[in-house]
Image 1: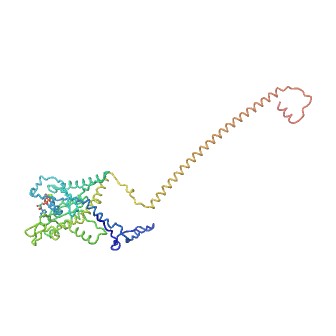
Image 2 (image 1 turned 135 degrees about the horizontal axis):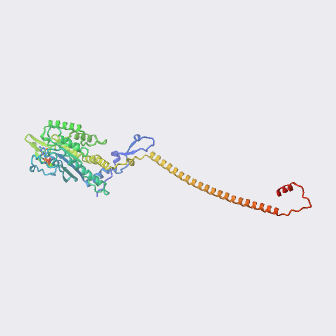
Length: 447
Ligand SMILES: Nc1nc2c(ncn2[C@@H]2O[C@H](COP(=O)(O)OP(=O)(O)OP(=O)(O)O)[C@@H](O)[C@H]2O)c(=O)[nH]1
Ligand SMILES: [Mg+2]
């Protein structure tokens, strides 16, 4: 077993890019927060991450889905064979009529070829999506439709797989790049070229190439390229452009600009090995006037196209497909289905705002509690009041009853008294009654 030796000298030999944010001060705007780059005191281990990534990538392997579109016999299959240095397509031109009958065109179809290729233990699972029949009819106005359908279907399949509960086995069948073959007429783009590119440029990484550029002179190629690019710009057609990152070194930036300066790539395809006059064995095409070398940058743009597709930007092609093209498709598709995203859910977390929200929530809760208590108190008070009123009425009734009773008794007693006085016999009393006021009164009373 091999044990990786910790690179103890990391801190002394190179400065790891550890980014530490200064403790955040509440009133300092984000842009003014200082970023401090610190040297590590010892080996931590994350410098090993690229190695881990590398091992994982090797284990998993890579994949690319490449679409080729262009008129019949423009060298699409040959270019694929040349790019991957493998006979993915048996070149079977002999069986095909040179000039297909435009009266009876075969409808545009989609043919897929897959191959597992390996280079220095790195596996690439390659899928080539060919669209035979494109541009072969008299009326080609709808030639692009089956191709756009194919791109959309692949997006739909991915969207469906992605929305399933089990997403462990989502296979990426999306089209990562589309090589569009322009006929080497030397004039300018045809209406079908423009229509096709306009239909697909927002769904796929579009890479136009000038097919069989060995049929044009160097000067013709330059002029043709210029006219094509003018048309592309005027029509607002977007071509794949590798993104530039701030931390890219100058060399990478220059290389990427050099590659893109060659668009549309003037290519020549051939898997034939031929011998040059100086004795070298090269892939190329031989003519009475000389040899065109495929892998020679002075002869054609094949090398630059290969750098773009395979050596430098394959991952960028896939990332742009996933993060830009597919995302746009997905958003507009879901919108059409009436599914809108509630962005407030993803609102950035702001502690001040959060605190304010919590305060408001708390205050509302308090107010609610207060209202509840007040209503309970009110109902208790009115209950007591009612009770008191009832007792008062009761007392009043009792009082009235007693008074009535008493009045009745008084009446009875007075009546009895009168009766008694009436019943008293009248006789002359020899002793005269004292002449006092009460007697007078009594006399009067009796009268
Ligand atoms: N001069 C020249 N001929 C080429 C080039 N590439 C391919 N050819 C030839 O063109 C013919 C057609 O090539 P293919 O690769 O079969 O073309 P294709 O576009 O796949 O054709 P279809 O699949 O029928 O549409 C073959 O005879 C090739 O040898 C090239 O760059 N220059
Ligand atoms: Mg072919």
